[in-house]
Amino acid sequence: MKKNSTATNRPTVRPRAALITNHGYAGPDLPIGGAPDTGGQNLYVHNLAKALDTIGYNVTIFARGGFPFFDSKKMRTGIQPFMGNIRYVFIPGGGNQFIRKEDIAIAIDEELDWLEAFIAEEAQALSMEPWAVYEFINTHYWDAAVLGVGLVRRWQDTVVARAVVKLLEEVVDQEILEAFLANAHVKAVGLAPAYHLGRLLLESQGNTGGPFLKSGIKEATRRWANHHRKDASLISSSVERTLASFRRTVQTIRPMLAAEALGDAMFQAKPKTAAQLRTLLAVTDRHVWTPHSLGVLKEERFKGHPDEERRSLKFCERRNHEFTVSRQTKAFAATSTELAERMISRLDVRPESLFYFPPCIDHDRFRTHDDEETAGTYRYLSKETGIKAKTLREGRVLFETSRMDNSKRKDVLLKAFARIAKDLPDTYLVIGGGPDNDVFKNLGTIIAESPELKGRAFLLGYIPDKYLGPLFALATAYVSPSDMEGFGMSVAQAAASATPIVCTDTLPFAVQYAPKEARLVPPGDVEAFAAAIKGLLSDPESAETLGYRLAGRVEQLNWHTQTEQFLRYLRRQGFPISISTKRRAS
Image (cartoon, rainbow, N blue to C red; front, side):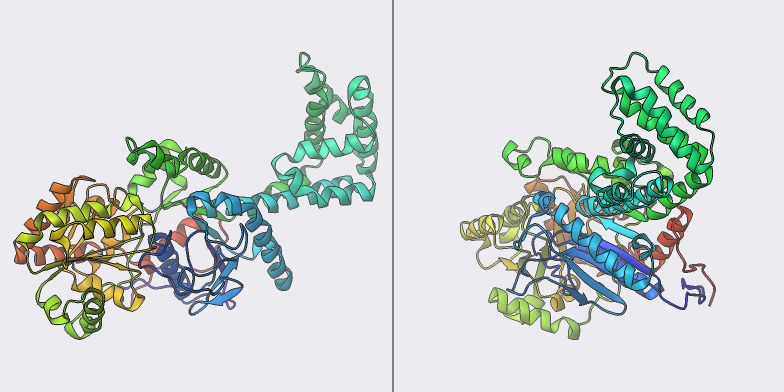
């Protein structure tokens, strides 16, 4: 029998990988039962870290900290071990309160400063450059990607600043060079190496342009060329030719053109230095972005929604962040084919730079469970609903869990169940998720004002972790009315548990992996949801068959296998992946 396994020739010292997930309540005790902004993405990061640990990495998960956990006053600070060779590092920034993901941009500058300093300190302890600490940095969602791109840009500022200083040593005063190094990030010198090289040389000679620009270029070139034993006339004539091609340019712009042309000519005169700089700039970029969701896609889904609702999602800001990140990143992972299509068609991502990495399943956790394994969960449900555990076990349980957000459309689910509750007297609906916000209160109002739902539909709030796997398994059906998902991990978890599914026809997992097995209905269609649920429960044998067929559909979603393929992809993209992931028979 063939198994997917990692080759045994691992490095003696474990290499390091970093994952950044910057919103919600990511941490060692991941509240996946519905804490704000803490759903499938952070579970994805959790499981990816576990797979990387198994393959042979030391994994650091960076998450926003500096504020309390959602269910306690304990602060999210410092470094916390997770499991195996995985740790969480909490990044402060943005104040000491939770910030929803739509508003997280206000925290990123402070977080980037802290993150850069943290990695620099670790690099010093390891006697290596900061960009070499991790073989790759995988960011998740746009906010983390902004941090990843920011790190790369700052490291490239450092590389360029060092190259410029090396080329100008003993030509430009040491004090000026030290000030240039100190302000490299402020000037973002990594974006325009030639310009900053030429500009610093010209300014050090007291040249500010105007009528003396030409003579200033010649004097600056002469001094630099004499020191480096290069032909000054070749360099200055190259600059003059460039300026001549821009005769009509206004005088205020000409010094900038001269600086760029001078820097280019200096690099051409030192080809070895220029080649080394190009190599270093490439080496510093170890960033790969996994968006999980895209503003352009979510905006499509929210077309026609009230303006007030759309405003809160800040589509314009998000689109611009995502487009900027895509133009400054060389490697990408898409969690669904729908996201991959939008990345290519709307964000100008090259198909060959894109890796398909869907959310996989923790098959040890999300699976079928026997009566003994579900007994504790039935007791938990009994305590939360006031219904005897025996009654719940002998009846039917409809289940849904996700954060309390308008886009999850839990109101549709309640209204659909109210339509059919009388016809299904032994059936109960339990809905998980938090926080206790306006959405939660509105759902409570719907239940309170609907006689059909009294004693039949229940809001569980945050579901303790130990009950979640068994709850997916004991459910008669999993029902998801969400308007949109990046993938639909909770639906995939239900499938792995052999639980039949009713969900919207916009969930990528169901559409891509189980279009015939899942019962698909249009978003927001109360009557269609009611009919689909009633039809599924009316034929228990068929529902059971669908459940087991669904479980077969997710067998391919294996974290270890997909992670090995991801590492092979990164190696092809030029990342310094040191662990061999060749498959072997056993």
